[in-house]
Amino acid sequence: MSGHSKFANIKHKKEKNDAAKGKVFTIIGRELAVAVKEGGPDPNNNSRLRDVIAKAKANNMPNDTIERGIKRAAGDAGNVNYEHITYEGYGPSGIAIIVEALTDNKNRTASNVRNAFSKGKGSLGTNGCVSYMFDQKGQIIVDREECSLEADDLMMMALDAGAEDFSEEEDSFEILTAPDDFSAVREALEKEGVPMASAEVTMIPQNYVELSDENDVKSLNRILDLLDDDDDVQAVYHNWDE
Image (cartoon, rainbow, N blue to C red):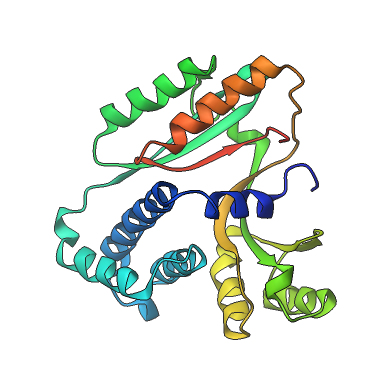
């Protein structure tokens, strides 16, 4: 996994400025609203909401902010009209990119995403054009420095809870699950007090692609930066080996 360490990316994003933190909180706020609308405001009866709350805590969102978001969403449930939309396309040198958005204005979001691709010399494709190159998995990242468990003990705990795979990095542990098993594994680790730097269902590339041309790297970063700045964009997945 070296070269595209998920944990390194997480640390980089968390060390960014307050504007970046605000973007993360906006993303999670929308996810809270949709989860409450779909399954109600009680996390004990709403596994999707429990997962979003865990994601919020992993991103250092204060508990009172989470609670306010849930209460606000419960009061406005009838007015929440966000839609999940997925875009797929190519960056420079055929880098595969998947964009997940949560929007109340599809035309605005489509225009912004298309603009990001074109400014970075990429192109939007049709649904399915690159998603076959990725596997959907539940992914839990644990910071080695924050975890008091030995690697073997954490691995057995994760596998016993239903995880599919466990791997060690120099600075972190990665636990992978089937999407349907993610909530159960995450909750089992949470009950044991395992600190999680990240816990989410994500898209993992089957293979990674290196870029040797500096202009391609600049163009791809242009796409990713523009998408990162868009409040409608919830997540971006790609197979660039950074």
